[in-house]
Structures are given as C-alpha cells and as structure tokens.
Figure (tube, rainbow, N blue to C red):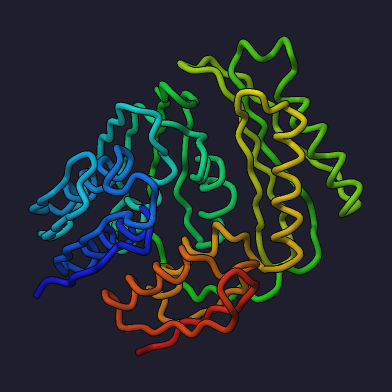
Length: 339
C-alpha cells in the first residue's frame, strides 16, 4: 500500500520528512503538488540530493526525481547501513540535506560516515550546519560529530563536510520551559577576504550589544575566517539554558551591514527565548523524534505552517497522534501520544 500526500500547502520540509520516514518504515509514498505553497513549486537541487542519498541507503525505486518535478514516488527497500558520499552541485543547503538523511537513519544500529562535497554550510531559509551541530543534535541527544572542512556560501557553495554518526537512542523529549539562561555562545564565520573589514568581529559585537541590553548576558563567540568559493558571512548565537538550547542565526547579504546581521540574529534569539522552550526552527525538526520516542512535548514560540504540515506527514507513517494547544502564528504547546 502506498501512502499518498498532497504538498499543495507545504514546503520542502514536508517532502524531506515524508521520504525519510518512508525509508525508515519501509512504507512507499507518493507526493503530489510538491512545494505547491512556494512561488517556484517543485523539487530543487537540495531536495533532489537528499532524496537521492536516502534512496541509495535503502535501494529505493524513485520516480519523478528531477528539477522542478511536482510529483514524486518513493518505494523503499531495506535500509542497509553503509557510508554515504553526497555531492551537491549548487549552494543548496547541507543543513537541510543532513536533516533528512539523519532522520532516515535514526534507527540504524551501526555508525556510518557521510562525506559531503559541494553545497552551502550557511544559507537563507535553512539551518546552518553549525546550528545542527550546536543546537539541534544536542536537543535530540544525537552524539554524531560534524567536521566542517570547508565552508560554503551562495552562489557557488563548494563546502566540504564529514559527518560521523553514532546510533541514536530514542528518549522522551520534554521541553516545556527553557529556564534561566546559563550562557550564550556563538559562531561568527566569514570568508577570508572579509577579514580586513573585521566582518565576523562586527557581527559578534553588534549581537553582543543587543544581548547585554536585553538579557544582561555576554556573548562568547568563536570567530572564523575561511577560504571559500563565494564570499559570504553568517552568525549563529545559541543560549544554553537550564532545560534547553535556543538558537538564532542570520547570514550576510549584499547591502546588509555586518552590524545588521549580528543584531538580527540576536533579536531572533531573544524573541524565541521569551516565548518558547525551543526556537521556532527546532520545533518542527523535533517532531519526528518525539514521535519515534512515542511520547514527549515541546513549547514552541510559534505554531508555524512547517509544524502543522510536518505533523500531517508523521501521523501517516508512525502510530502516534499529536495534540496542538495554540493557534497558528502564536506560541503553543505540542504533545505526542500513542494513537
């Protein structure tokens, strides 16, 4: 039996979650109207790379895996643990590819190595690789290590990342209150040519000023300048609290000063810290892991469309039901229970 899904109101997260859970559970899936809610619907390069890699893991039969395709059929075989080589020809997000692949292999009992060449470690509308490493993986209890050998920015990408996985042990995730902030850490990264203008330092200084003013906390951030194929910058800030980790990030853009980038990242962190136990980006990414554990709950600063569409996918594949207390666009509580 094939599960059928309609992506007309959803984005790429919907597809990534569906394909990852299809591989994990062995249930075939057909998705129509892919990314129908986006100005340019259909599959993009970063979706294709992730789907192809997951398909390789489980010897899947895949129909419709091409740029711009709005219909996809994914018929998985059995997942066989083996090392993966992922090649991304654009600046497509490594963070999004990894997010899907890591979910697909969540039940593997053997470690694997994932070697990624190409793509971006920092990008718009996608989690930086540093976010997965410092915020998301610790939240779900992943012991996986990520080694960023070369950073990648838009438009050329060209990153190099090696991931050494460790089998994940399902555990109840209960994140209802962040609690007091214990420390705020960060990573500010920029291409080598931007060192003279001290772009990475300026991002940190601007973010640190906001954090001192609003939270009375200092920012301890790592400054990194790296050779890259395209010039760019980005900053991740994350608060380690008594019960959680909350992140905020921003990437540099043309005609956007380093100070604006730093301030935006700090403001994103402060807003989510005030309204939830995790940030809004972690919330929808955590949902499959709550489902795999069979119980748990999180308080999110916003019930987003990503959350509601992700829930609709997960409930098709796993024997769980989600209870959402809150309105879309506002803070809320999400709980998973056995169906």
